[in-house]
Length: 152
Image 1 (tube, rainbow, N blue to C red):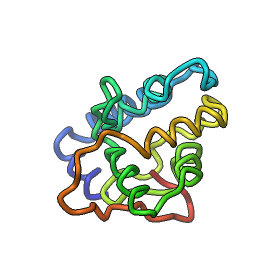
Image 2: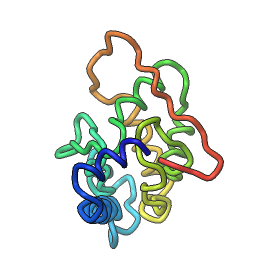
Image 3: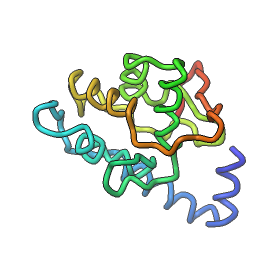
Image 4: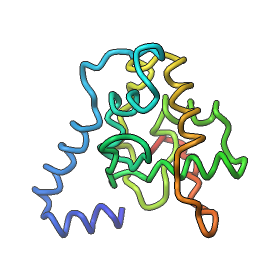
């Protein structure tokens, strides 16, 4: 909430409303339809899902967004044994079920299971386990916490 307040002070509340609409439009991906794994590489699936509008995803063109956490956090958590591929698939399919501290709540689209079939979700999750992330000097401890009402 503090981050939202900082953005609100910087942009003014009308600017913040416009910013929020822009983020939602960028992440909505309306009209994309379900992509099958044979139609696109994992990198292209992230482009089709417009994930890079909000997240930094190494190896994915123009994935430089900072509204959401960098997806290297997923790679690091997987490497530490904190996540499985199935956990990551569930997080992609239901991105509002967890929230990373310091990021806005409930702004992720909730239609990824309509956009992507299970094979595409698996390929995306497996790709996130091997992102070309910089080696952290100290393993980041920003694993998202589960929330009752859903968040991201």
